[in-house]
Image (cartoon, rainbow, N blue to C red; front, top):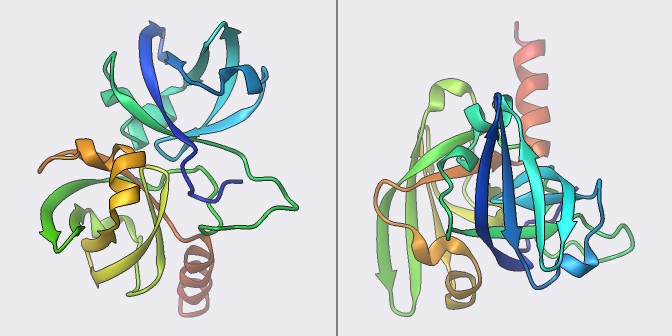
Length: 197
């Protein structure tokens, strides 16, 4: 379980394919605090630490993850939003995030707005996921509040701190990002669909 508050940007140092799996080695200033078998979110994807060596650690993504998320798009040198799992007696500064990406979206708009930024994203609404204005959304692991919400499109407003401390500053029109929709909203939508069928 995560909160969507990014701890730091980890740098991809190597990518190795083994059958249908992808081993991703990253450099992080908090590698020494990690342990084998620990769950860490990378661009919002919960992955298990399988190796630690000096200031680098390795996680493995399976085919299901590569099919559903943007992890397979990574290149050596890319910066990845990193968050360790939440501490149960700590504050949830973001919202409840599972680290299970529902689908990807594409950056459609980037607008500067007097010191902040507004990002618009296009996604496939046929997958049944939805947002509501002022509801929660996780984009590349970042907990955010939805501004505009229509089927297949959402926007968020980004403050300078978030631009600087996440990989949002690398986004361009057409960049593919990971979306995790609000888990409470997903349960409500599933419940309503079941009682109406």
